[in-house]
Image 1 (cartoon, helix red, strand yellow):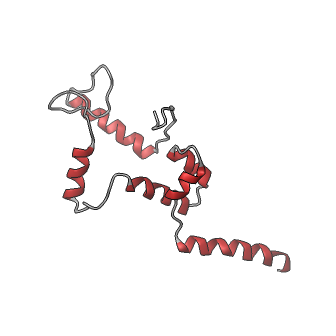
Image 2 (spheres, one colour):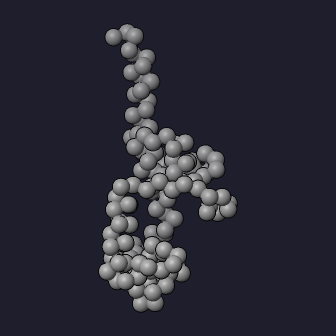
Image 3 (cartoon, one colour):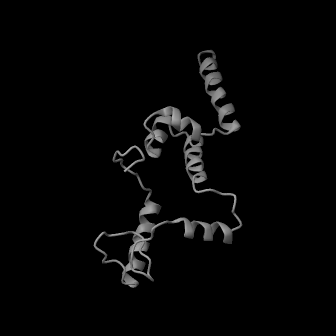
Length: 131
């Protein structure tokens, strides 16, 4: 469910699916895989679902010296990588689950080099009839 209360489809990469398969294998080894609600991440000590991912997040950012990185920064990075690899703003909107493209534009940061590249598209189009 999204923040607006609507259900939405989430698209996962092959790498993500492989990671979930590995988590599943580990949970079978730890005997935490048979919980009735089918949680992806089960606390091996309590054998219940985790209430929050923040404890794990803070442990990782501290151990890697990334205290200034917020979980929300990952959405911006995800969107910027997509935009800078020529994924359309509308596809990025759908992947982020935004109801309108205006919100997506806040996340999509184009690299200056990509913008310069795009000016060359027009230049080539204009020059094409004369060459």
